[in-house]
Length: 339
Image 1 (cartoon, rainbow, N blue to C red):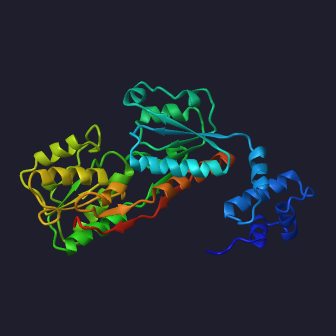
Image 2: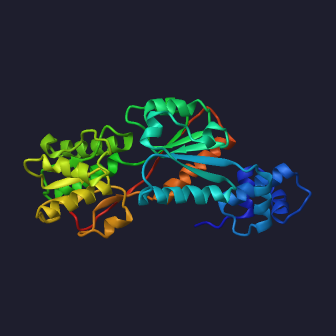
Image 3: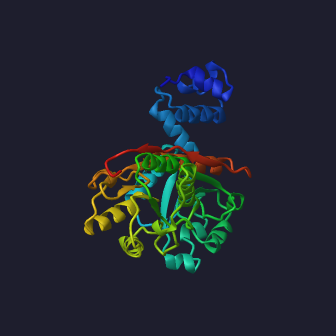
């Protein structure tokens, strides 16, 4: 990795090297506004010789900005890693983070967290997919907002905020093709494809891989209908599998939770994984390597997602333009013993 220099900082700000050098050496001959810009850029670029007192200078100059998270999922490993990434990145810039858990009852009754209702926060990171009416209520507060994922039928422009996705369709396409090339057909899919854009894109990747290989989607092997907990509980996966008259040679699961639930159910019924039925997931949870056999999956760098969400909300708070960004972060396939 290239070592950041004073020249790099000067070029990025269109300032002279001499001006940047003065700031980084603590000179008081440069205006406060310019000095703060230089120090911020040095932090952003990772300048290695930045003095602690200069970092403190930025923090002191900044108002204590506050960001709220909205989430309705339980604090699983997946979300903890993302929230850690958000918290660590916001902390670098002196931002405070508030966590708001929204229950189903709160969502149904349009209950807004007090730190939002009382205008106590400067920006909002929405980590869960909420019903339209709830999001309409949230948008009334006109806060700078960044979303992770979005409802399936949402018009991204209507969200009035930046949206961060992780790449889904191409990675599931490749994963499904791997199963096909191994002769592990027919293949089924498990996941609530009506829940959000990312799950639906995983379904699209699955369908496209089959069609490109001259294979049809066999609906009798797919569990894709909408259910209350979106197959994030063992019972919903069990019920879906119980209804099947026979099983496919492999399952592509919308996430690791579903894959692990399916693996547990099938093993209890006497099936061997992958000898009888291969299973693959998505997310690369820590426990995906601990199950027997270890789960083939798609890795999401969850802390990197959190950092990117934090960077997006800082940008939106400090420069809340009407131009919104949609960003897709890359993923990586991890082959293990479950297929």
